[in-house]
Picture: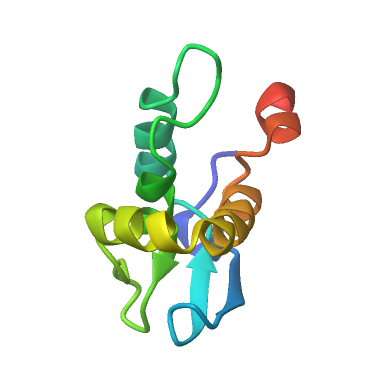
Length: 107
């Protein structure tokens, strides 16, 4: 028997608050929506590396309204000065979005 819409419970995107004192406090990192994941996969380089670390940060780091906290250009500038901090948040965004190498290989 086919599912009835009322029987479906949609999952919430995973979220995690990350201390980012270099930006002035904690930020919320969330997993990506399907269209955002597809945009990231479309931007992968041939060697499997990310074309833009700032793109993932722009999509995954959100404010209270669930909109991007910073633009890609602002993340580029932030990461240029605070590279280790950008990588720390990137690792969380990658994990929450299922973009770790192991997760990609399994899918």
